[in-house]
Length: 415
Image (cartoon, rainbow, N blue to C red; front, side, top):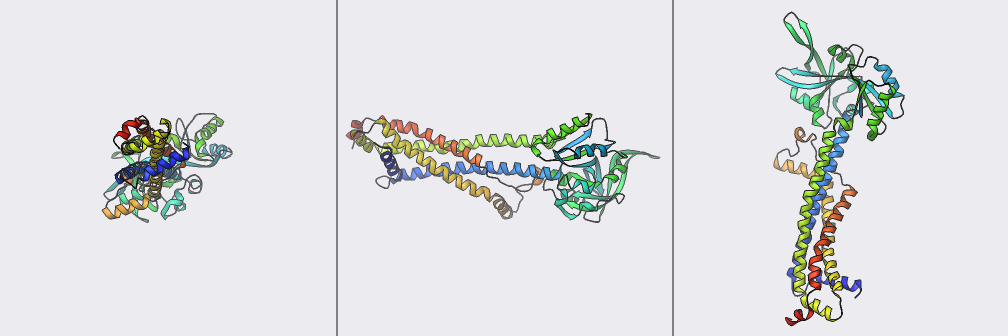
């Protein structure tokens, strides 16, 4: 028989409007189970992709692509180093910084934080904090004014707003008549930013670099240089090339090293979730086996007639393989469609559930970001489709083989 005839028979068996509609019902259940498994896999992979992209974007908006610092202390002649860095083609911008840990106090509210001294004009060319200000401006930081810009979560923890004053205690000790005391300075809150990443919103405060130099007693030196590179995926080679050009003696790092644990854990999570949810797809594909076994049992007489008319065992196998493949294809495409639809509306669905349940499902203090973004990638869709269809095709082999080896005379005896 031609392939067209075999496909026509498989399609008629798939609908099965006569005699036994229960088989069609079971076929629909198999499609639905496979579709749910595929949809779950697509949604989870899309959420992980979206989380990774959002995390990378917010990290690069808040921190530099690469850092250059001296091995044995502050960089004294940092202006020369910045001039050399600015002259390199793979480096887009340079900004000096002073960084230290400190304690901020407002009444009884106390919070530890990282204090970063910056030059506002140069800092804006390196990262995007200036574009994420919710109150005030980064340019309001001025030398000698002792102003400070806080992350939104840090400002909330200290119960302060624009114009309030906080006390900064530095671990740099000073000797007084009553003993060794930490250096203390009062700052005025001039701005609040929201990076959208809890690590920075809760643990970063910005001051003018000259105010930070007075507080840390670095004088004319700086902790290091923050670099913005032309190609973020070559940040490591760019900063290493700069260190070599300067003659060595510098410690270098880039954003992939600073946050490598985040991205490694995301990659590992994606791999594990793909493997686990593939088992759900496998269960959906396994249902096709039971469906086809029932179809083979129901169509024994038809198969016997086909055999007596000259159909080969291989031709009979093709009929049921086509039927199982059709169930798998419909279920997979339906699952892909449902999964993409849910993934594209994930944030709206999560926010709706939060309002309905009156709780916060995605806590920024736990998951680093407060949203649940999703990103659908064609590569993932292709991979899910191939896995689902492959499992479905494997599931059709045994029932089709059983149908092809049934003796026609034995089947017709009971008709």
